[in-house]
Image (cartoon, rainbow, N blue to C red):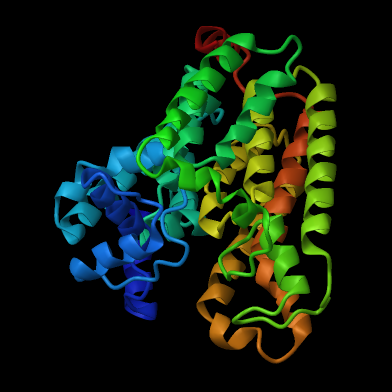
Length: 394
């Protein structure tokens, strides 16, 4: 309810521009699949949207695995506005269940904490953006929240990664466990591979052929990954001027991603006890910040890191302060994006502000890594309930 009210507020203050923009790409892709046509054909996608009276920014068109477009096919049989309303309701229901699952992981959960946690999650900018633009992240969040609680994690992670590829980083938690959680890997990876076989169907090859596009520089304003940050620093964009013109974006991106990956693997390998929830949250964090062209809305799974850190505060309230700082930077990014037509224009140095959301995400990742390495006395119940859940989930 909080998230919905916040979206309504956005409609009232910034207008309807961009409303459900991304969903209409999904919907048009489903329409093309129902016709036996290629959903990755941007011109055909645009034609479907215009014929239906939907005027959106198509951009690069449908850029997700084909599996999700097949899931959308029933909605594509409906008028776009009706389909968008149904998808929004499903997203809200998924959000409610995901937050309920995450709240269940908190120690000594009472109504004040439950209400506060629900409000905080509902106001998280990536959640708001996912609802506003009609993104699939809230459905993905529900799958990942189930996996976070160690319930059939391989199955949940495989499906989530087939909808949006960045959750594939979660498999790192299973791979770095001691011993590796083979059941998670043996369930999730073949499932993901099987669902990606849809790419061999109508238009699927076009997705694989766009690898260069995904790994190349991208200055688009909503790209809050390392890729987007470095691209705007080295290349002029619609809204920003490059302060480091000529920066070798692709080489710098690959270097930073490699260093972050190595650092994350080290943390996961040496973390005392390798708790599944923390390892999973950190592994997903790596996928979120490193996946190329990841928008701010794809930061939604960072709620798992927030939940994990809170369960292990153990009186270290300065950790909560750092987490709040990261959250506020992500909120600041949402506000800056709303004023992007003016806020970055005065100086190339202001382009650094176009990635404060990424800086906030990095802070949340750093806090999560610290808690994994220095867990202290766990605030979780001492009855071993979480460990029993994990055994069942494997």
